[in-house]
Image (cartoon, rainbow, N blue to C red; front, side, top):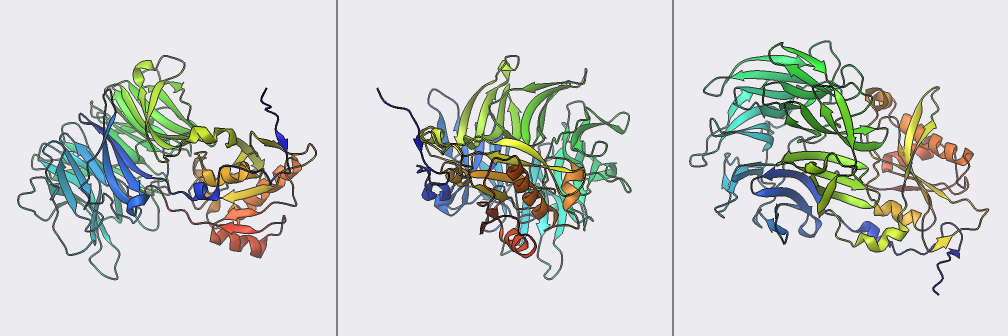
Length: 543
């Protein structure tokens, strides 16, 4: 009989198959998803091709087919606001995308097999950039955000412009909206008679204060009149993600009333907005990049939405008639952008044992206890089932901070290795991890850099210090005027809390920060014994 007894060894000394090479292995980046009658599309950033962005088409069938759409000489990525996002749009038989090298927009047919054709002028460089667009089939044009960097030593000029889709005679795009510092989310209603957009100005970032505007479009496509729907002067709110219903009502997300990003509806007939279901939960996230899609309007009475509550993502159905809300069950702790087509949900997901992935969910199973789903795409090609005995599952902990009455949160990963255990009286060493920021967040997606340590007998606390997103405006703004103070204090408070619990060894507690935090820790703090470790991680939405 094979013995399954664990070997005894000191915490921190356990052998593990999760090697440093595996932890350092570059995963594919996910730059966005789209769905059309031609299947689903995934923008894949490939480390094996120097990060080139490739649009991959998935076609359902007995044998799933994945097909590269982007020709080898193209790279789907935009540099608008530097962080990018919203680099491609699928409409009917066509894809419109931004090419990294020259930042021009190109039109590519999904059916003819021809080469992409340019839609925007060649300015001899990449100073003029485009992102986050919508097709206006009524006038055969593409409405998008343009960033113009041609005026040297001056701020870039951001505008919403219309680009002709003919491609036969390339013209200068027509400016539709201008005058403010930044724009995003240009969205047309169903008959293209109205357009909505988000704008904001210096010194604010879009999660500090932004404005939601609508404009009436003439038969020639010009804006006849416009008005501010949310974020008016004197009102501190940050509306985001506008979407039109088939009835002409405008849905959006704002933190006006609760301090959390909740769903709102602007009634076109009454010209007023109201919160649909106020909750202390976040239904969106900071718009560092373009193209966030946290909810979908299924019909006139139903909205499917993702939301985040105290460190955990969920997905639910909102009934607009009864204002009732039903949480749906999926085995993922992280849920990002989502799209719906023909009773299928396509959603970006992850969990402690699942890397960033795209799942296809059958909405026909919505009344069952668990939704039927398949994973279409994964950022990591490893056979992760081989490593499941060595993966730690985090607990979300809430701990007191140095500020009276305030608490903060962390994802606590206990040591885990199916092959080893520690002597009964021993406590594990703790590695305290501090994410980059501000307004970023420690998430529970599979992170082999964390599992490298936990599988060797270390505990890891991945801290969501004050200033992190996912906990509302007040929590996010704790860092204002105190960057390098609140965040460092909260990480130390987390370590102190775990020592008092007591479940970790206070004599073995190094901190895992970025370079800025390492410096601040050594200058101002002396709490535990250990060395700092600095890392640099680039955002995954830079497409």
